[in-house]
Length: 514
Image (tube, rainbow, N blue to C red; front, side):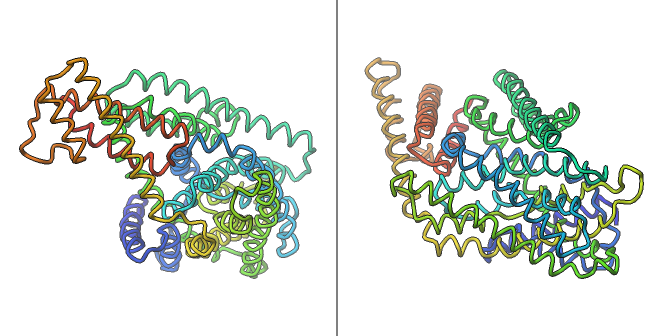
């Protein structure tokens, strides 16, 4: 098959799978991986080879960027301590544990064992975000899981680059050299991402063309990745930092029309990329297994043990962390075991580890083939598949069992209360216009009636005059600003904020002059 035909075929399969996943209430990423494994068993799929560049350069940047933009800046500031402990400390411990266990179970030397550990040490923001859309986790816990999955990718991939360089060179690097490389990659990537975010914010504040805004939004992830890699820094860190900064300023940079268009454009792009990449994860495994040497065939047991080790390390790291947080809160937080269980089980592996696994060098510094590379890729992909399938299918039941799930009634109550507040703000503004005689009483009465019935001129009897449209635009602007203040003050959660913002944006679009 041609590459384009393969991609189109995977998109078609993914669309069907995603549709059925919604109907049978299972996570689409997990079902896509299963479908990919089934397709990988077919004869024609032996011709499919995914290069590292396709995953790391074409697929990864926009997926990381989209996950970063969804992260709540307010929650990130509150959770920076546990996020740091998870994104740095847990990654290092997980990489060491996997590296050591791998050398005991397989013929891999210690240097390659740590390469595998670095590949699998991080959870995946794409998988976690995709799975998290189906879960009703408390806002702070959801932010913790998403923030960890973003920033531990940067740590893991930086560690992977260092471990790969050591394995290729065939030597042992000193701790000072490793620390220096780590700092250079991490700090350099953060600086590039921050500078890019500042530049993009400057441009977007002066852009009102939805087409240009869409183009900018699509090229920023790739630009951040390429610029950082060009100066020897971490492209992943650059993309994540720029996404978080721009996402926090999104309200200031766009208007209703642009936000709606960007949501539609980016939603389509992310669906296509997620669909293809999760299918590819499963699709690659059967072909990789066929290329293993005879001495490397007993890989199944090692994959299962490594997957278990990763979960056990997370549990061992999370239990004391959540217990300490509960003690510091004076018992105000939930009991530690449900939080530990959910956060530990939410650590699914996915796209980022796959990109790292496919990027394992083919040769050593002497030009000889890297020994056991096929086994490394099979072990990494096998653990990713187990993680997405087992944890993906069981995470939602675990959340319900733990009692952490936010009740639908509570979420709806927050939404209803926020809508009531916004209506009160709008009504107060209309009364000010009446006191100032800034519009005719008839127009103001129409606006009051529209606010009372919470409809957007759905009744034909309403008169859409220029004055009425202007007043309604002003009222919606006031409501959008009030919504942003409520979100910044922590009065509403991220989900309620985004839901109400889309509602107000759709209403505002009706009154924009063509």
